Amino acid sequence: MKRLFAIASAAVALAASPALAALAVGAAAPDFAAQASQAGKQFPFHLADALKKGPVVLYFFPAAFTSGCTIEAHEFAAASDDYKALGATLIGVTAGNIERLTEFSVSECRSKFPVAADPGAKIAGDYKSTLAIYPGHSDRTSYVIAPNGKVIFVYSNLGAEQHVAKTLEALKAYRTSHPI
Image 1 (cartoon, rainbow, N blue to C red):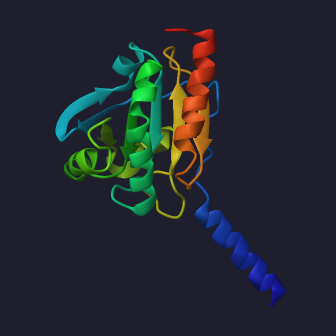
Image 2: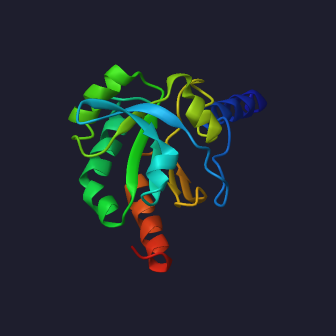
C-alpha cells in the first residue's frame, strides 16, 4: 500500500510540474509575433520591435479570468509605471483567444499593458513554458529579455505572488550596468 501511495504521489507531482524546464538565463529568446490587445484595442505585437526600445518583461500565464491570473494581472498593472521608468516593455501571453484577452486587457490589466494570444501555446512551447497537466496551456513563467535578445532572468512558479517583485528586481540589477 505504501508503495502504491508513493507511485501515485510521484505521478501527481510530475503532472503538476511544467512539461519542460524554462529557458535558461543566457539563452536566446525566441522571436515571435502575436495578436495583442491593450485597453481594448487589438494590434500586432512583435518581440523584435519591442526589444529595439529596451528590455522586455514577458510573462506567460495559464488562463485569463482565473483567480491567480487575475491577481497577477492586477499586480503587473499596479507596477506598470515602474517597468516604464526602467525602460522596459511589459507583455503577458496566454493560450487564450484575442477576443477574450481584449476584455481581460481592460478589466484585469486595467489598460496598463498588453496581453497577447498564443493559440495552442506555440510561443509558450518555444519558451519551454507549458503545463504538463494541461497541454496547450502556458505555465506561469516570467522572463526578462535584454535588448540583445538574451534571457537575463527567468522565474517559473504557479504562485502569482512573486513574479512582479522578482522581475522588477532583475530589471533594476540590469539597469545598474545598463543605465537608460
